[in-house]
Image (cartoon, rainbow, N blue to C red; front, top):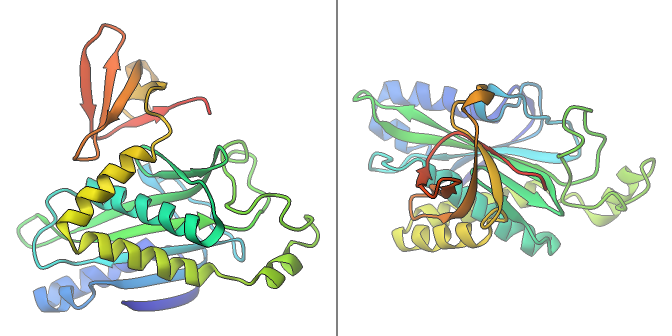
Length: 266
């Protein structure tokens, strides 16, 4: 693993895609040379999540990193990248902090009912128009901080608000040790380990389903993002081997969702 630490950048995913774009012009060998490269930043000025939404990425409270995956073969099922990354995050949070992390389909990790991690996997298209590499972006809120009003209700940190008084958190963090980069390395290594073995991917998908906290819950599905009129209510049955969300509608019919958004009151 080639681990690169950046103090501040616009977006680790944007930088990873720039690197992939440049390497792709030089050929397959240059592209594969970026495999298992990790870009980790203390702060992002233009962090982003799914659907071009901004991802709050302040300095000192979290770590924001992108793991580049450039296998020898084309990436056939990109949804498995996000699922594998979510499992890697949950495993690391358990080991580092003893956190009981759970997953909200498709790309969010929660601790104590609050979102502490977002994942964004973006593909690089080869000359044939197929995905030959991916930038898997992961942002984790570790230390408590004051979130903007628009996300304060749902965003949280891995460490509780009791981790140091609000005016003494930096001192408390220094006493506990700043392990942000260690966490980024650990998550990345776990992710690469999963993606390098088909049997480990299958096991990770089983774990992904088991870690979901929405199975059995009633949710609102928004199949067309931004179109509230397309929303419908459904009950979550589970998650299949392709990381699709299995739901049952009120009329008894069943669907397998591979895209869209869901809403659930936590």
